[in-house]
Length: 466
Image 1 (cartoon, rainbow, N blue to C red):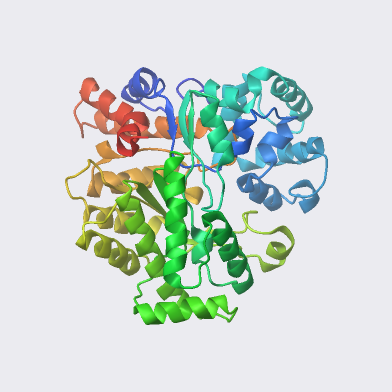
Image 2: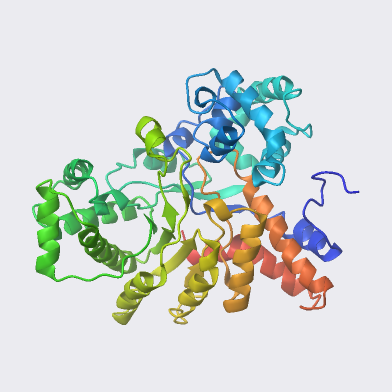
């Protein structure tokens, strides 16, 4: 019987072990999509305790704690961090076969050198040891990134953000690049007229112009797009349930814009027409400036209306959606491609039933200009676990080129999430190693080692050219 989470964790064959230890493990981390705080990096934040850095903002853990019967006071409430951590320690033993069990103990090992399993019996000692370390300079935000060999981070930022923290980081000559990502979702969302109107006013202020018509709004967004470019941004991101299969005339779109400006309710069909045009216009901006673009699709968000009212968004009440994803995405990408304005694009689906759809869809728009121009993004959110990653890589292998894959990202708000890259790399090496042992691919370690290193780091570095 193997020891739990030893040096060969998840590596089932000798080939997998060689690929991981000789090739994957040494590669730096290129974290091109996350939700880390640029302010915390700029200020090199020192965390007060393990509960704060581990449980604050982590809706993966919150969902598990609720499922384990933990009262909300100890999840997102005002209970002291030590008590929240105690409740988390009660939950961890119940997460066996959930990736949280692996992530928890990888993080304890890699950051703090702790091999002890977390449980109610060990909680106080682990909390005290980790907290004492977190209060030392060695465990500041920047040093946590250095410890994990991070080379680049792309945060997720609203167009109206002044990016002052990114500028400060750049001026500090911090050796790890921290770049913004342009995420204009709020400008597209007409479902809440009051919130949208407030957002347009903020956009007007940041762009120093007044959007009295639809073209004005796009002009304001382009100014912000240009500003983000000046601060080093080369990447946009769009979180949408689905890309609408819709079209409308200029006059119809202008009428929808004015209706929203007047605070009138917008029908679903009108929202779809507006969103389709919006994504097309941003897509043209992305191509014009040589950016890449990301589409995160397929989520039913904020499903628990009672708790959404009291806790707000991004608190752990989302689920995989079963929207029809193909027609709208094809319409958007084909329209951009038809005028040679399709930027490098990464497609992340959250429903595993859509893996093959998106893998084949991406293949329609490869044009030979860039290796892997169109990417099937890594297993995302509910799919960034062993089965989800394997299914994504199998779909990509069968229907595209795994060798051109740009690999893993954290998509996290926590500085303790970088072992997820290790988790992915071990799964990748195991997948390839099994094929070698089964005689399905040649045991050419030079070829395979190079492929693994490319997927872990080199492909992303070449793809983005930050």
